[in-house]
Structures are given as structure tokens and as C-alpha cells.
Image 1 (cartoon, one colour):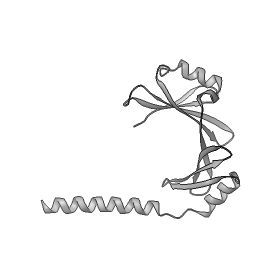
Image 2 (tube, rainbow, N blue to C red):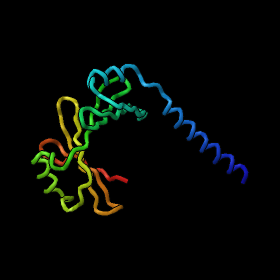
Image 3 (cartoon, rainbow, N blue to C red):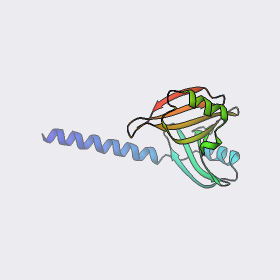
Image 4 (cartoon, rainbow, N blue to C red):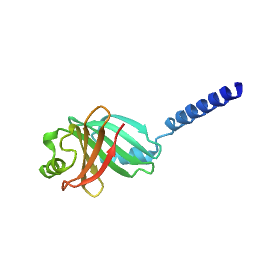
Length: 149
């Protein structure tokens, strides 16, 4: 019995230590330089280590954003929460034609990607348990349907 307790305690300590080290990783200069070049007017910048990338949440003008960069400083995407009324008409139509049209729309996020590509993430829910993130391209086509927890 003592052996099981020691093994469990060791496993918990190891996981806690590993997650602590992951958050202490230094932010590469390439990442901060790339961020400053892309968003020179950003304010209130906060960084999060996502293990395979870094995410900066920040304010610019009167909007809040989250930009993701690879550990080599390559910009991957930027997300901005928008009002449902800001959705392009073709994306609204795509959502209305989807099997989730009768679900409650909870949040809309515009995702800017490389090569001036735009996607829209629409968070929907049918109940406290049934929740999904729907990803649409700028032409209104449903690209991905992910279950959220």
C-alpha cells in the first residue's frame, strides 16, 4: 500500500514539475521581434507558452486579439472576437444551412491566417453538454466541426 502511495505521489510531483518547467521556457527573441513587427501598436501584451508555439493576447485600437507564433517566430494566426452582426452574409448563410442552425450561437471569432485567408469560428451550444466549434471559410463553407468540453 505504501508503495502505491509513493508511486502516485511521485507521478503527481513529476507532472507538476514538468508543467512548471514548460511555463518557465524563455520567450525566443525571434517571437517577440516578429510580434513587434506585425503589431507595433499593441498594448497590454501577455504571452502564454503553448509548448509548440507562443500566444500573445493584446489590445490594439479598441479590440482584443490573440496572435499565435511558432517558436521560430513565424506568425500562424490571429483571432478576434466579433459581434454576430459582423459575420459576412455568406458565412451566415453557411451556418443557417448547417445541421447546427437551431443551436444557440454563443461566440463568433474571426481568424486571420497567412496569405490573407480568413476563417470564422462559431461557438454553438444545444445544452450545457452539447457544445461545438464550427470553422467556416470566407465563402461560407463549413471546414471543421469540433466538439468542445
